[in-house]
Amino acid sequence: MSDSVVVIPCYNEELRLRREGFAELLRGGKVRLLFVDDGSSDGTFAMLRALCRELRSASVLRLERNQGKAEAVRRGLLEALESEAAFVGYLDADLATPPAEMLRIVDALHRSDVAVALACRKRVPGANIQRNARRRFLGRLFSLAASLVLRARFHDTQCGAKAFRATPALRAALRERFHARWAFDVELMGRLLTGSPDAERLDRKDFLEVPLHAWREVPGSKLRAADVPLLGLELARIAWELMRLRASLSRTPPEVLPALPEESAPPRVAGAG
Image (cartoon, rainbow, N blue to C red; front, side, top):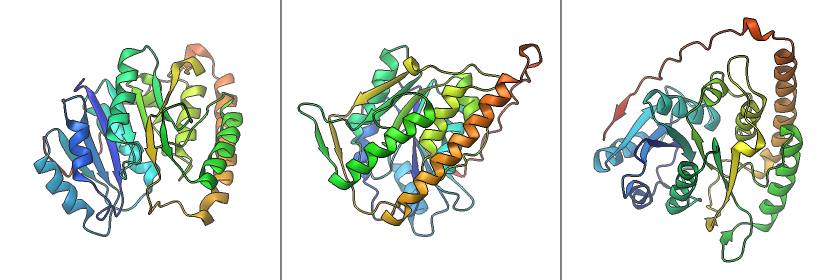
């Protein structure tokens, strides 16, 4: 399954990067890793370069300036698609979702005919989900609101572990920058469910939620309590953008669909493996 690339967005993660966790991700040769340094101001980039020299099948892409997690993930996924990977995904650098769970999500995508596999922090018997009660409550409220925006029911939209089949729909969904900074997961899912003039939309059945066996809250999250109200505003913006997209698609005659322009790959700054 080395045709799978997992993107790891990083911003000032020098004190939180766990070499042993990333080594575990690469064990067995199931995936390749692409770290995206989002213009870090600490020693993250130097650490990532050293890590990529040490690990096999890992490389790093450095963005010229800090642009936010949404853009780091988008640029990383585009880079992964340009490498002709058949499956791509992303995982938070803090490894709140353990490496073994990310590999299980990628494997679920390989073994099914779905287009997207999503980590789901649903409490199931035997699962070890260590999540703050307040964050869990807010997360459920957010997922309910996101499901209304997406017009499809999802239990967990915000867990930072997702995998995708390389499809024209995914390429089209990544063509433009996201409007959302924190809720970009919902925006990406919304674009996939809505479609575009040059790519068919996905259905809810094309998404598989994979209940996690383990997950833990990691201190030092970039999302502060004061930012929570911004998530509501971002959902409203996403709803508006998706409404505009649906309206434009309803007015586009099938016989004059424009061609999808060829993507140019972001420049690779340093890499190994």
